Each structure stands twice: as C-alpha cells, then as structure tokens.
Image 1 (spheres, rainbow, N blue to C red):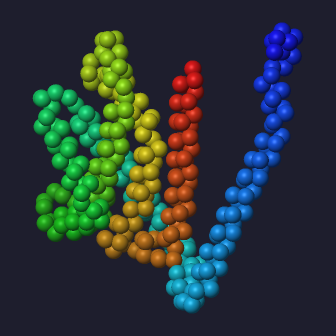
Image 2 (image 1 turned 135 degrees about the vertical axis):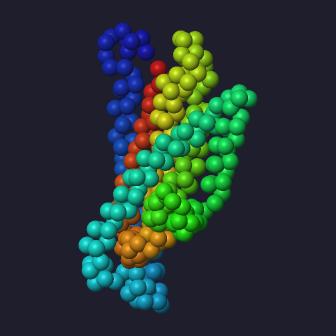
Length: 278
C-alpha cells in the first residue's frame, strides 16, 4: 500500500476499476439485453392474444380503420390547434391563481385566519367536485343566466372551469414546495433585514417552485388532456370527436412532456446529491 501512495503510480482504485471494469460492462450489457428481449416477448404475446381474439376484426374496423384515419388526420390536426390554445391560456392563469392560493394558505398568525380559511374552502370545493362537472355547470349555467356584462360563450366558461379546478390541485403542489423550505431559510433572510413578504418572495417561493417543477409538469400533462373536455361538453367539433385519432394526437403531445418530467426529476436528484456530497 505504501508503494501505491509514494511511487506516483496509479491509485489502487484505478487498478481495481481496470481489473473489474470489463466484467461489469458485460454484466450491464447482458442485463439490458435480457430486459429488451423480455419486454419484446411480453409485447408480442399481448399483440398475438389481442389480434387472435374472436372479435378483433370488429374492434379493428371500429377503432383502427386505416381509411378513416387517413381521411380524418388533416382535419383533426388543424382543429387540435384550438385545444393547444385552450391549454396555453388555462396554464397561465392556473400558475398565477394556484400560487396565490398557496401563499394565502402559508400565511401565519391570527390576523390571516380569514384569508387562510377562504383558500382552504376554495381548495376543498374545487378538488371535491369532478372537473367535468365544474366545466359543465359553468359552460351552460352562466350563459343561461344572461347576466349583463358577462361573456355568454360556453367555450369561455369551460376554460374558466378548467382554470378553477386545476388551480385547486396545483395550489397544493405549490404549498408542499413552500413548506419544504426549511424555516432557517426564512430566519436567515429576516436576519439580513428582509421583511416577511420579501423573504417569501425572494427566498421561499423561488426555492419552492424549483422543487415542485416535476409534479407541476404532471399536472399540466393532465390539463393538456382535459382540454378535450371542452370539446365534449360544449359540443365543439374538436379532436375529441374523432375517436380513432384522439389517442394518437394526445400521446404525441403528452409523451414528450412526461419524458421532460422524468428529466427534471433526475436533474433535481443529481443536484441534491452533488450538494450533499459537498
């Protein structure tokens, strides 16, 4: 051991890695090969079982008709852009309203009890009512009332319904991020002369948002899919109406978003590991 430390040769760890590295690579390659082959076998078995079932021709003609698929594709893609527009509009308002609700619930002290109570009631109500029911009630209820000064578009109120419903869910994600910030962070900010509001704005919220990006992405994947509720409830001829196409179209959008979520989770894990190592 002494020779290793004083002779200037490569450390023992490097020698060991050279000795054991090749078998380790072979084991890793073998593991990947086994995983790929087993997955392919299972997939082929499922496809074989489905395609050889007695009523597969009827299912194939109803859901996977190639001619209808190709004929509908241009129209579906053109109208699917409206769903993307609904999603972008709703996402902006959900982010803002949800953060406001989370901050309201995080306020401490007896003076803020009414504010906390309103935020709790809002969250409980809109998380308890199914999203499709909220959209339905607003899209048809508000225009029926004919209140002067309010829009009468069912689509407008359907988007409002999505915003109200998802804000309740996302606010809980924000609140979990806010409460995950250690109280010592706030104490340090206050000791530097920052007010409670400044500490929340400059110290707590930035850390909280960075920590909850992955679950936020999951919520927005669900929101992107639920824009189809507007088409269904309001009876606008959207991509949702094309039963053969909607799964493919939404998968094209949601799969990259889920992969981005996985990437963000992994990046946050590596960042925390490097921080703890230091």
